[in-house]
Image: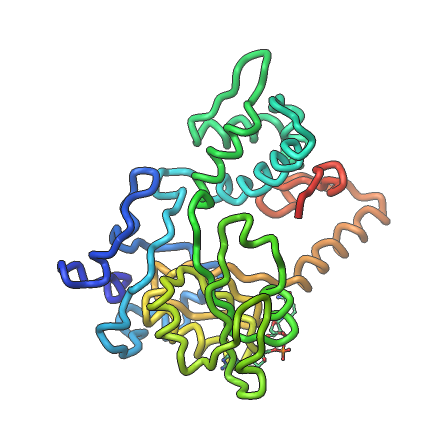
Length: 303
Ligand SMILES: NC(=O)c1ccc[n+]([C@@H]2O[C@H](COP(=O)([O-])OP(=O)(O)OC[C@H]3O[C@@H](n4cnc5c(N)ncnc54)[C@H](O)[C@@H]3O)[C@@H](O)[C@H]2O)c1
């Protein structure tokens, strides 16, 4: 099914503009089955062949494919922890720390040190006995693995309270995520200038994605509009979506959806707060992705 959305591979296709390889992987490699955390496998739209929006050929897969660490056999759980290590390392770097032991880095990232050493071994990083890890080099290695050493164009669809806040956040650019388009369906919002960008009408969605090589789409529309936006962007080849709308999106194979829901995070914290109040133990495995409770202030978070 994923191949239904694969780029035309001929010499005159947009795939010919593939910018090259990252970590030994062609950015225009065939799509593969992704881990869509939102997908409901029993939904009829997810059946192979049943979900195939009709789009003009020239709009199909015009974006660069994001290289994925799992292509190299790095477990998803490890990939999920890499940003934690990166954040901790950036904090160390800001304090001019040159090297760090696995124990100190693990404590700063809120994981146990054995898990950290195993995770980093997937990157081929083992540190130096008695010295630890070189902070700058590890930042580079993790950034490279996460695809952060290059520029990723991001479009935000839905420029209300949340979309504006995201657009105004200055931290994305420094991490390699360039906001390349702001789109909204409301004519009253279209034309507004936010963080140096003019909000465009969603009529131009496919064109913006194609012309600016948008790789990641952030959906910040009301729930009722999210699936339609998702259908449009996946139909033109976007394979990475960050969804803030409180709705489960149905997507073709090969499309990764990350769903952000702050209320769920709050509910998890409330659950653990309740456990702490009743004196019950909190097991490490109860935390998502093996992340243990950690005092954020101890991380030296930079964001
Ligand atoms: N995940 C979270 O933790 C979290 C937190 C806050 C809000 N949200 C969700 O994020 C979304 C946005 O919240 P908000 O407070 O910014 O809402 P909002 O009403 O302020 O903004 C929504 C924007 O989407 C636009 N829009 C509507 N239909 C559209 C379409 N088809 N295409 C493009 N744009 C369209 C509207 O014109 C509006 O500008 C909502 O779904 C909300 O529930 C999630």
